[in-house]
Length: 465
Ligand SMILES: Cc1cc2nc3c(=O)[nH]c(=O)nc-3n(C[C@H](O)[C@H](O)[C@H](O)COP(=O)(O)OP(=O)(O)OC[C@H]3O[C@@H](n4cnc5c(N)ncnc54)[C@H](O)[C@@H]3O)c2cc1C
Ligand SMILES: *[C@@H]1O[C@H](CO)[C@@H](O)[C@H](O)[C@H]1NC(C)=O
Ligand SMILES: *[C@@H]1O[C@H](CO)[C@@H](O)[C@H](O)[C@H]1NC(C)=O
Ligand SMILES: *[C@@H]1O[C@H](CO)[C@@H](O)[C@H](O)[C@H]1NC(C)=O
Ligand SMILES: *[C@@H]1O[C@H](CO)[C@@H](O)[C@H](O)[C@H]1NC(C)=O
Ligand SMILES: *[C@@H]1O[C@H](CO)[C@@H](O)[C@H](O)[C@H]1NC(C)=O
Ligand SMILES: *[C@@H]1O[C@H](CO)[C@@H](O)[C@H](O)[C@H]1NC(C)=O
Ligand SMILES: CC(=O)N[C@H]1CO[C@H](CO)[C@@H](O)[C@@H]1O
Image: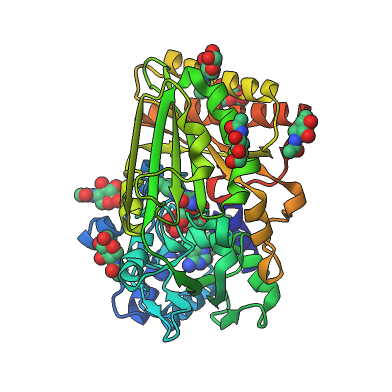
């Protein structure tokens, strides 16, 4: 999908032939940028280049541009786009660099526009809007807002970039109340390929406003400011429960009931279920993460919505705590490094036991094959279930609706994604093949049993999707 975006932008701006002509003077693009921006350009083998080349996955970090350019202002971005389009130079845009696959926000032999220096976080006088620069990571936003008793609908991991998450959708701790992150953007500042700066909101360029909410950001321009709806927010509550993976039926059935019955009754509640497979033994562990946007009373109690899980036997571990949004963005962060892949399939939350068993057995079979064929590499698979309850789908209809094409009558839904990490590049094909096949097999069983939804969430979409 991301690659398709790059190709599209190339076609839109007439770059397609240049992108395939290796003798095209791309080095000149870097030099022209350097001249125009008084040196905000970093070349290979410099400290600046090495620092900017900080991606979450190894595959992105290995995809090396001719130069990084780091505009500091919106007019700088306009200058950069004018130069690059005039020179027919291939380029990409980077915010937090958390797309896993090569080319996601990196480009071999092109120019990477790194937005890191466009990093304002400004709260309006009435505390209703936070204007966020596209180069921020989510922790930069929450660290500013927590002390003010404010929050926005944003990411759940400290290092994820604001731009990719907001442009693709954005599942948040607060989504039950407000919808996904993209549903809570009041206004975008966008630099078009022409270098023109325009604004998109419900009453200005409303078609672009619609498309930017989940329709594939880089297709339309470079966003240089997001005006986000803010709300009063204090501490959160977190509760985690781990079970042996052999309990997957009970846990997944409980998660289905939570998605269908529980979450709509308490929109402040949020939950994720992971079934992790040990890289060497294939032994699985199911971990439920529960969050609540308010501290339960009495302190130490478990909110009613999560009570059905408290009585389940065989829990391996549990933990509870309260704290700031920043605390949980740090606690739940996934470290950098390693080779990475993922993809997702979205199904009706009310899937039958047959579908559940099919998905778990397809997952286990795929993981066993990786242990057998991976040559001892540390290949760490995860099956991640995320709820899309009807209250979230209802919030997605705000402001004219987003670009997903989902309504409450399509739900409730569960997104099943399969993130995986490994270390040996020799296993790239093996692992990525297996993920692609697993996604196709899971989609096929969902289709066969009438619970498939064709929506694919861009922000967890694999290269093959
Ligand atoms: C550890 C981890 C945790 C995650 N947690 C969540 C989560 O809680 N909720 C959720 O919904 N998703 C989550 N995601 C998925 C995440 O939303 C996507 O990976 C997202 O694309 C990352 O954004 P980024 O800015 O870091 O990525 P980048 O790779 O920098 O950018 C993503 C895409 O957007 C383009 N782009 C970047 N900036 C701009 C801009 N200003 N204008 C136009 N195009 C731009 C890039 O070219 C690229 O195509 C997580 C991912 C990871 C790896
Ligand atoms: C590639 O670009 C160079 C420089 O503009 C040009 O001389 C050459 O003809 C181009 N080659 C092809 C195959 O388009
Ligand atoms: C954002 O947060 C990171 C990590 O805490 C920090 O290194 C960086 O300087 C921050 N950026 C800004 C603009 O505050
Ligand atoms: C799911 O549970 C069943 C029944 O306990 C078990 O046989 C199977 O191995 C489990 N699958 C996974 C992936 O843990
Ligand atoms: C399903 O969820 C509802 C609402 O939270 C709860 O009352 C009920 O006990 C749950 N059912 C089971 C079987 O867990
Ligand atoms: C779930 O599916 C079952 C059978 O497929 C059906 O009987 C039931 O009404 C459905 N429940 C909901 C809440 O849609
Ligand atoms: C990947 O899949 C393709 C097509 O299914 C197959 O031909 C190829 O052998 C596979 N490669 C690996 C390394 O598994
Ligand atoms: C000497 C040195 O570090 N050379 C490196 C310069 O950068 C290129 C591209 O990043 C590398 O391939 C070289 O190894």
